[in-house]
Length: 403
Ligand code: SF4
Image 1 (cartoon, rainbow, N blue to C red):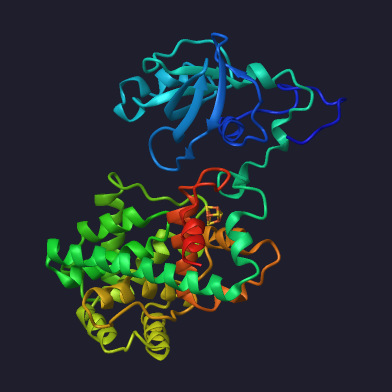
Image 2: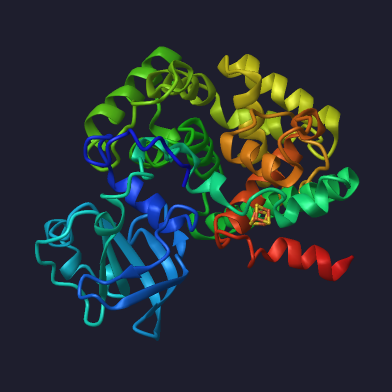
């Protein structure tokens, strides 16, 4: 915690506190008060705050704490008020049955917690402290940027060895493409409709990160075989299905979506790709040698001219769908070692920052989409599962064992 002027008044005058502040306070050992006690006054020691859960369910998974000297392992749920546990219906939700600590800011209000679950009110410890200000917590840094302080274990290994870094990224990118190919193979077996599987996967890719599920649901609601031949009519049909049939099941997200990624724009691109002679698109893509850089570039140019999409989006469709599709159908023997450069997403950027340090040159990886795929793979497979101090990073232990 940063120190602040003693002339500043303590909370609540110094600014509002949100649930995310409380999450950060629990997660980050540098912010969390050293000596904690449960609301009953029993000493509570945090051995591991758990993994920050970005999906449904408790806020932190797999935490380890000692309550009155007894070690407990389980999940942690965070709320501003104790009563929020009941208000949110966690008491009857089996996903919360393994919660061992309920962390709140405000005291009071009863919650029917799982048997043995400890209750900690962080506000009791921090509210009166003149050196605490929620305004000084950089919430955007959590959970990704608050791993171990630099140099992180991976940075110590890779920052001075760019060849090793590139080799690891290529291997990780290949693993990601191979994983996608395996998933597609399973879909072929289950669905048996090559053209529909491809259509559905490209639609999901057009949904970008916020509307992937909605676009996939739309592809199911309006299969390619039912799309009108004419492009304008296909766009209208997709827009109608999106507005009438699917919206209730899969909500569209439009907040914080750039205009270029708006669902309307993506529907127009989908119509351009799939109206009319769609299976012809598949045959055209089949003809490119996707194992080669030239084949990848030609396929990218074809997608761009056909759908009017940007280079980054076309590269993402190639990396996430077209190339794994070719691998799943054994038209290429392995993941290509070069893919068209796609936009470097924030998780990929952050992973590179962690692995190479603040001053690295992004040109090292941004010119090859396979390397960007490698960064995303490392982010998902290693960083998201890491403890706050990176002590359990399987990537670094693997590199250590094989070097
Ligand atoms: S978890 Fe991520 S940041 Fe930490 S050492 Fe592993 S790769 Fe690096």
